[in-house]
Structure formats: structure tokens, C-alpha cells
Image 1 (cartoon, rainbow, N blue to C red):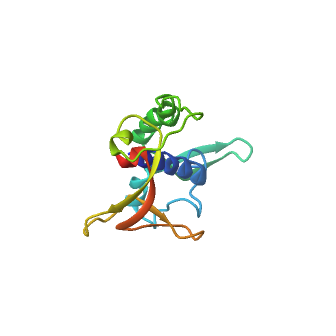
Image 2: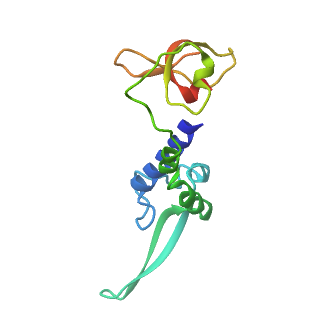
Image 3: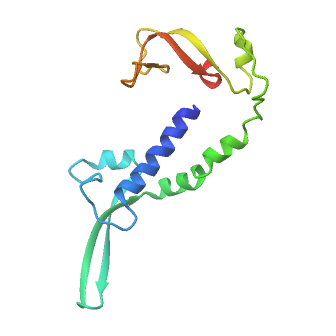
Length: 155
């Protein structure tokens, strides 16, 4: 759950910086009307039109762009501090006295730890949760295998 929240926050930040949706017109990096309204909705964005007046040329100009929806602005206000709040909830880690354990119960409480686990997901699982290294060629998510997992994933 924590990884999903972190991914969601990173995605929102990336869209904000790539699109520059607050004041810039639609560019090739942003979702465009050709992509469709559904993709804009998926990122919490909508098309907006703004009128501007240039005092030097004495002409009005229409600026079309993409900006966050009101709901996304509310979500950003709440999620801005999610990472730091999550870190504040972490207990102090005793790095001087680490201990090994084969008992699953030791990983279920509010602890920081990891373990090498053997896992098997049901065959109809669409999104396996454990990443397995491909030896320097990235990660893959298998239905069964052996992987390192954090205490939060073991829960």
C-alpha cells in the first residue's frame, strides 16, 4: 500500500513538471485533445482556455492549456506531506544490533526489515507484487519464485 501511494505521488509530480500545466499551453509532452479526455481525467487534468491581453501589441490572446482539476488540487494539498508523515511514523532502527529471524511473526508488527521469501501467486493474478531481479537487466514480476521482500510486503 505504501509503495502504491509513493508511486501515485511520483506520478503526480512528474505530470506537474512535464506538462507545466499551470501556465503553459499544451505541448508535445502533455496529454493533448487527440489523446482523449479519459487520459486527462486519469491524471486529474482538464483542458482550460485563458484570455490574456498584451499591452504592447494591444491585442487579446487565447491561451489553451491543461491544468489540474479542483479535486486534484485538494488531493495534492493532502498528499504533499504524505512521505514525510510516513517517515515520522517509522520507529528508530537499532543499526548496532541487527538480528536475524525465521519467524514470520517478527515481520508482522511495525518493524523495519527484509527477508528472502519464496512466493506463489494464484494463476489468475494480474499484478504480482514481488519484484525479481533479471541480473542487471531490470526487474520482472513473476507469479512464483524467490525474492527479497520488506516487512511491509510480508504483512
